[in-house]
Image (cartoon, rainbow, N blue to C red; front, side, top):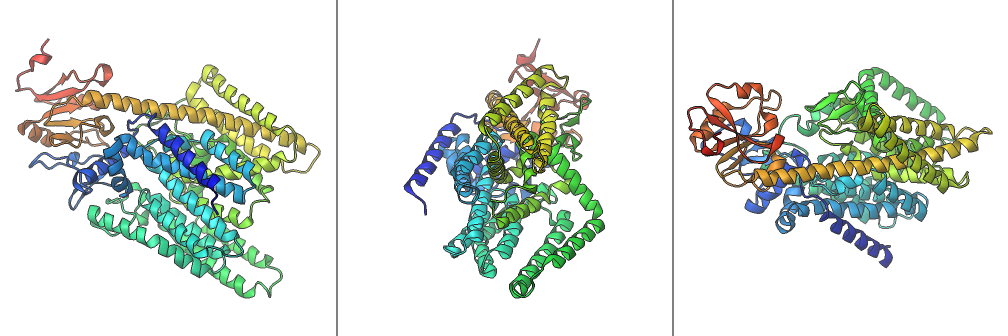
Length: 635
């Protein structure tokens, strides 16, 4: 039962996050966000998904911006339809801040849901406050709360569904059974309309509800009923966009990891696990009262799991390597992308950013090692439900080392962060009960963590890179080792638990300074995109722009304002497109970083400074040698 106080708290959170949204930069961080913006713009202008980015009579693959797809009715965004449909009116009302508002309000609801979930299932109000503090101040959550790409919507949906699942599993009376089950399916379905990875919660929650809830078939039927309408909407949207009824399609093979064939082994494992879950639940319902000792069955299950791991050893090895690279040390990532570079000092640069693994972003996660002996106050069924979700969520990413592309952190795992925060808060509270002056130890640790980061930046040879990718790795591992050792019963246990609290505090302090740095870098990148969008927005009509789309907000998507995308792999330009554009009276502009030696030496063309922007950001205009030089460019 929700109280007036609870509703007031939600209203206050929504107000604070809404106000904060309009204080943030409205620039775009990546091409992904431009694609989402283009989809909302098209929906508002035409009521459809297709964007206007064409020169009459000219056909070229380079007129299809990156992450867009040539659909039956034109060029469309590859991403799910949610941001196009709901973002359109908000974009019209508030500009880019309107699209960000969807995320920030979702983030506010997530904090509210996390507090309620933690207070109900993880130890009360103090643990709930600590979990919210970790999420807001000790993680990269806020970076995506004030953004266009809809990660925060996905986080809200998964957090809400998990909270309802916990209620369903632990409510012995089965109150509100039908409403909860329908809402679980509806929340996951809603998330699917914004981010396809939300669908990963389906098999995890289905197995958990089947194993741990009463009347599992009834609950799963209702959950499916709540999920089905949203699947139908996603299918119809993809039919209009791509000509397929696949609800998680990106319209092109392998895009976004949505090709089922690329996850065949993982899917086969999930099917087998699901069948075993069904068999286990049916066996338990039938024989639990007759069999006193289930240990032989558990030993058999363990042996089968070991045999499966040996048979699929190559997959297991890839999975473990992915775990290390994406959770512990991002410098070990092998799935290299353009802009990624392993540096001699042992760090990894991604277009100048220092991309971090989960443990590097949040070294306090090391305290989760204490789950080996602590956390007994958390219902066993909840522990297994979260473990199932974490396992299923990792399957598309760990075996492929897939880090989510452009970004400063592991954004694909953001839906797990509220759950990790509440587990960590519960463990910290439990470990604190065995010691004294816990707050002082945490504060001391936080001060040490911040100081260590600042000193590393100042004096260590790796400077800011190592402060993001080396120092937090060692702190994460140290925290995990201390948290694990603190469970040993010997006379030094009290000292180990004190050291664990200091290490956890250091992890929180370091996570806070890293998160603030990430948010600052993100805002700075967005501000730069805004500046360049204003400067490049002076290009005349009837222009072909080989310029990154995030720098063209306000100019692009208008008639005669055409974006072109050079070949990403080779850096080559389609000169048939350029010739036809010039023949149609278009001027051709090139972003300075796209200029290559081959382009400079191309016979029959020359590059002239355009006067648009200045310094290294000034655009070049590509003109034919047989054209007269504009007086504006004469020396």
